[in-house]
Image (cartoon, rainbow, N blue to C red):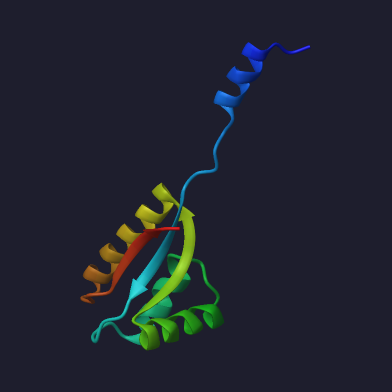
Length: 99
């Protein structure tokens, strides 16, 4: 039989789910639709059809959800978008928001 002390210790060791973050693309007037679709397929592993839907959402609503990830993965994806966009001469911006 477990003692009260050991049960308290087990509760302290209980693992929490990592905090999740939404990664969003923000609309701009310069990044081409093809480039946005390519980013969604390359970085976020979306199908062409999914990428088109998200790209249209970005265009119409000024932002679009790319996915929900733990902090480190979300941070990496935001950095990848920025890096590739700048290399290609586009101002496309990704942000992350806590869920």
